[in-house]
Amino acid sequence: MRDGRLPPTPRAASVSILRWGLLIGGLVIIVDLCALAISQRTATPDDQAAIATVDELVNFVLFAILGVVVVRDTGLIYMGAITGVFASLLDAIVVAAANSMAPPPGPPQPIEEYFVSNLALGTLFAGASGVVYALIQRWSGSRSKK
Image 1 (cartoon, rainbow, N blue to C red):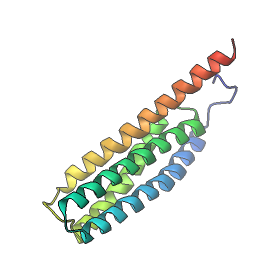
Image 2: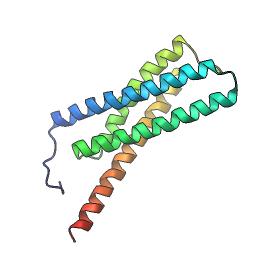
Image 3: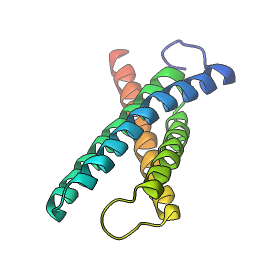
Image 4: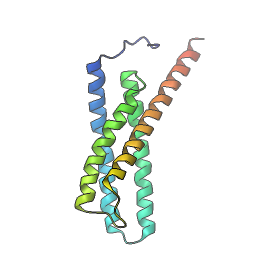
């Protein structure tokens, strides 16, 4: 590695994936369940659209933070995307169960569609933010050596 650190052992990388995936994935679950509960209490479609938009924005930010933290912790770029898959699977399982027990207002969304969109969101944002973080670190490291 360029910064002088040794590459992480597979055990250390898997512990980082589990730890950060559970922590940030848990936060995403809390945000999604709060948005579900609030949207069930609102009557207007405009309010429900606003709640869904805020929920997605917060999910984008949390998954981006997840990718950066895991890549910083492990030093491996692809670990951000792997952790994004893990965290989004946790979120999809819990929120799909909540949606099946207390469906949100409006037309029902198939469970498969929710899983696919959640996996794409988590993997894309965690992976992309990890890549950007690694590129910024390499770029800043190469400029300071000149």
